[in-house]
Image 1: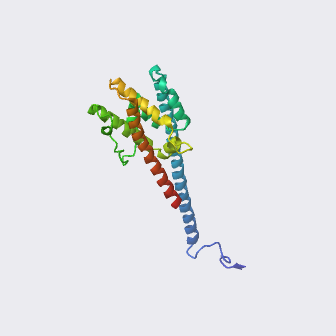
Image 2: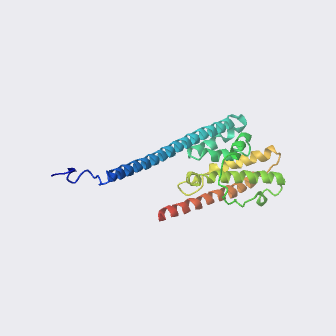
Image 3: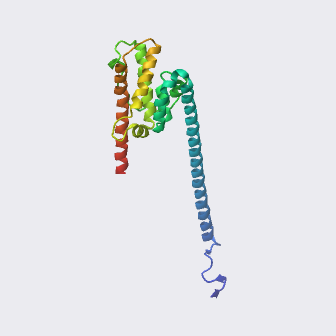
Amino acid sequence: MLQEGGFEGGFGFNEDGGGGVNEQIKEAFEKANESAKKFKAQQSAVKDLRKEEQKKRDDDTKIANIIIGFLNDPSNSKYFILIARLVARNIPSEFILSFISLIHKKSEHIIAGIKTNKNNKALQIKTRNSFGNLPPAVKLTIDKWTSNVYKVGDKNFKKVYLSLINPDNTIEDSYFQLNTFILEDFLKKLELNCEYTEVRKFIELVFGTMLKRYKEKTHNQKKIQDKS
């Protein structure tokens, strides 16, 4: 029904000349701007994630090439099968690189630049518990090596642990054997001879303790996820 001055019910105009519509338009623009900001933030996050993924792929390729370069040295050919077994088990390339860093300068340089969790507890297993006749400087080098291996592995502790555990709940022997040979080579280059059994015993103690730590962290993580 027509009334003087406009349609009955109008279009939401107030007597002051349409302030209600202005408020509605203002709110609509504010919501649109807020949505645009959220979309922009999401797009930025996706872009950053893609950059990070690309960087990780580039880093993995770089590390793989360093490991291949190490194996191409005829003096290191004996490590090929053991490293190939670990690669086949999907062990993180950084973790494998940390093994050979004891006897390979280029690997040592890369491992030194890898960011690790500074809050990690130390292994608390020092070479003073083994190799009693080694010079103090050599013991410190071995301690630094095992510490770096632990810290690098801790970045992907769940993946490392699950990759190295066999169906019968035993630890993949290549993990121990490779590091035993690496430590043996390190000592031989310094003309420090140790019995294989002594070196293997030390490796099983230290590297076995690493895996126990990763196992505990994996199980604790699962408990937290189950509760949430």
